[in-house]
Image (cartoon, rainbow, N blue to C red):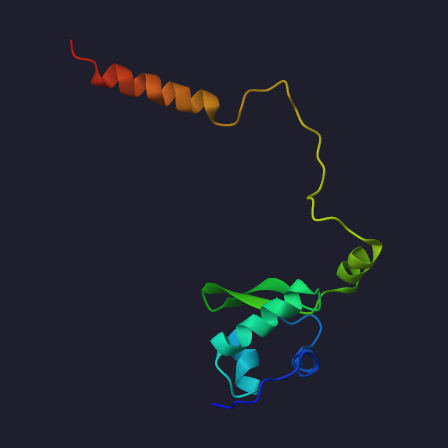
Length: 115
């Protein structure tokens, strides 16, 4: 395998907008192993030059990398926070799954009781 470590610009030059690349496919272009190039790809994700994506490979779904779209870049330029989308909370309903868990527990207790 090659000892040449590609620069960020060289890696980004291999990407085409709209396509998702597996780490091994990108590494093969530089005659490297995927594990050798993955820290560099993660660094590009951390600085916002790439983003994580999923790629369907036959019947399995593989992690991959893609160039961010224009809307993603605009959101970064505006100064988006790391917080998720806000949503309206509904405080009037019960906790999700709480009623079912209590019912299951009661049924288990009743089944385990000796007569």
